[in-house]
Image 1 (tube, rainbow, N blue to C red):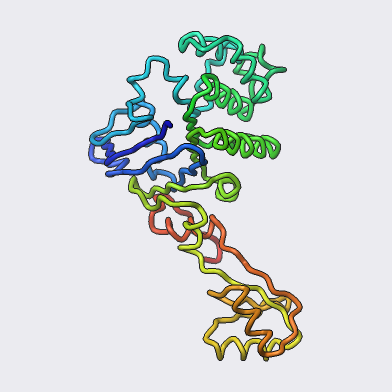
Image 2: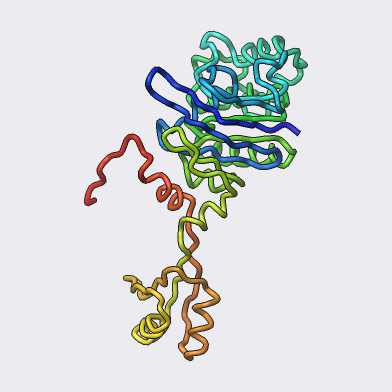
Length: 306
């Protein structure tokens, strides 16, 4: 099995430390979401893994080896870091053929990835005529060209339309289901929540979290319960007597903080209060992420009314 292993990785640019003593692993068979505010070190870390930068100290390996040690690296790891990387005067097919030839990849893979990424009909068009979304698809095609066991994608949904975003979600889940190691960097929390199994979160170059997504959310966002009954004051009195915080809503429903549906349902049943609605309000990845990174954001804007 091929994993990405980062061990005590540090990268300095003059006096600035972009990455500080990072240690984490990305395992096969799951999609790992790579999160963090702008300037947190995500892109730098991915460049270090791919040998595009040299670390100040520490190591970043793929299957126990440095990227530079692979003679035909596209067969080992496919990566999308920059959708503008393809030369504008080349066609998509020619761009992929050059990559295939340099890594001894069968020519038939070019047409296969063009079909897989939806670019077959425009494969003979010059890249400079492509939209951002089409360039993203071409970058993903290049990443898949060598049928690699490791796939690293930096903001793959950038520029894609809703159909394309759903396609990316299905693609990365499928790659992980095949046993590949998949690392996806994204700023789209709702989208990451749809495909990620595990999260690695950075802040100011340091590791903030490395855990399964559900654990990440539950550790930072307390559960709440939404409840409606015919006797709101009795509900509020009941829950307050049991030490539970409760807030009325504009639609007649009440929100109970730090509570589970089973607990509230039992209390209402014992008290004989009629229940019109009883539902769990799960925490979201966005809530948990913002809670964790609130003090780690390098660039922030003042919200109106804040």
